[in-house]
Length: 199
Image (cartoon, rainbow, N blue to C red; front, side):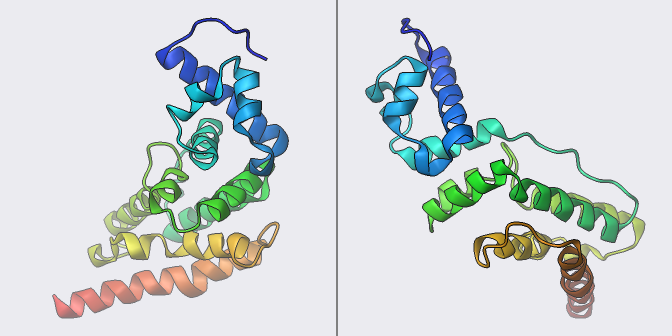
């Protein structure tokens, strides 16, 4: 437990987030309470509520503290890059930290603002996928018409559904290959062709 010293601003916020992250790691979102975080941080609940209006917003902020951005794959192949991104996401969502993420997504429901904050800190969900698509365009593997966020995120959305909707503990690698080979790559190519015909 943190000692009760007079901390303000960033120092107090850091202590609260560190305490919340520790609680999340130990007990998951179900066990996260403002009382436990306040006690661990050596502060009072009012100091927490002034920064995070509820347990869910604090949980999301604590989860962001626990996650780190992963370098983008650059294999020279769109298919391999897409598989690497999916495999990394699959490892994350299969881990204890991924279990916390699934709890938070479920608790957030349709709260778009909170859901958007559950992406990697400072990153848009589509950004890594648009990056690998841009590289594919430069290599001649895809046409510029494929560079749309809704198309770019199809593969990761399908993988997320395996965890959130179907409740699987991990997705077998053949499912990842199927998503890329049977949905993602054909969609990218079809979208490119369709936009080329209407251009």
